[in-house]
Length: 135
Image (cartoon, rainbow, N blue to C red; front, top):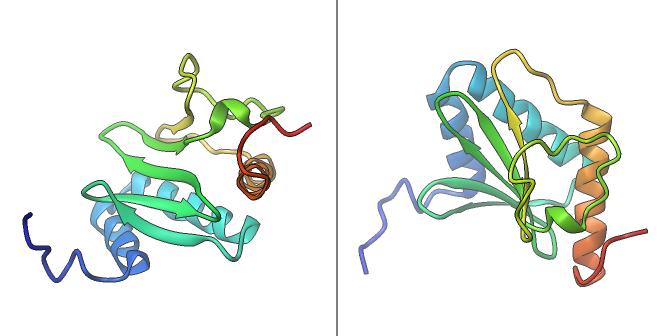
């Protein structure tokens, strides 16, 4: 097993701060905004750094991940198909049985209240064991 560097041993919150700063453009701003909304919706959320550099937000299980690509910031909800999405925020990975995602492109803005409701639904699903879609 490859030994981890000092940077990889830093707290996840520090690594996420660094990722946001390294992006330095609209992607960093988008990731920072979504992180803030996650923390507002679920103040007890645990920030993690997994899979060689992916921000992960968990509370009794993974809520979502935050990936950054050249043209998109992607918020992937591991249990997305089981979550209600009345505002239709999910716009990617729609055919999968295990996840749903929100792709944010430059200039796009995700509805804050709808996103926080999605986070709260993911928290509730995890608290209930994640077995069925909430009513």
